[in-house]
Image 1 (tube, helix red, strand yellow):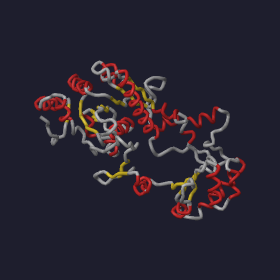
Image 2: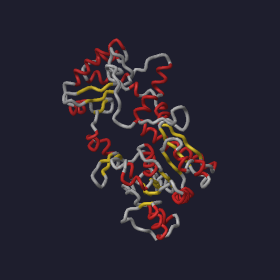
Image 3: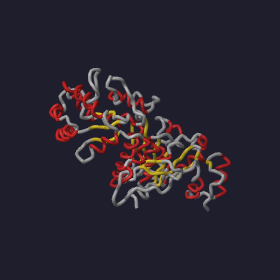
Image 4: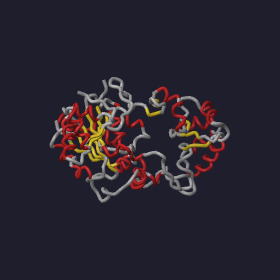
Length: 386
């Protein structure tokens, strides 16, 4: 049994944040139904992200007309959670906003996940991950040693926002368990990024410069928290922030004189250049063998291609392969009594529409008529469930 078994979730979102959130819920046992308009059947935006299609069913349903909404509200009556990721106001125009939905189910947990949130001067503004990171002050911290801005090649705002959405849903479910009441959750991806900046905010407003922000005269951060290029062009990360771990590394590298200068700003350049020279003398594999042991705070800077072969990840089954042989992320967190599982690898667009309509009490003739009218859509080979 999984932790969220019996929980019924409707996912109206299409891009990455909402589907990533509902995948997490599905992995832990929730019955997730993705609802998309039939017109999207030829524009599958998540086809290249197989991981966020697992443990879900898919229903193609047009919400713009009364017949589609009638079917949708039948689905709502038997659901616990609804996730949507449209711009503010869109669900209202469709007539499936929180106030409309709660009339059919006042226990519903309704989660809206957007870039800037449901209110404020930027609520209607278009944006993507880079924009949210910039506004939140996070992008400013991502600079090279010359002070030039860099940016991550993954969706930090989208993914952290989706996890905050999942957390909000679980909090609301816990509240409902005692109060019996559902509620509305407003998740802003920008808000989520700001909440992750506890350390730099504390440094900055306590009157000292955050050590991760470089100037044009010094490397990024301190040499004890840095990545160094190895002889074979790879990199090794070095992170012994504690004095005793730094001392142990310095002695192992034959540089005990660095031990008492760990946070001395006047030695940053000297020590960094010294460590760059040392680490450039051997290949990454040799360094990992030389610095093997629990007290050497180092790790390889893995390429994405390395992950299926990284022993720690292999041991914890954090990289799995789907039926096409494509590596996908494993299941997390790992619960001892109610573990997550993959019960369905993927869905096809509209592939579960007929089954869901049957569960809602519609006959085969009614389902055929819905399809003729364009209210629903299903693949020709999709079975009917009498």
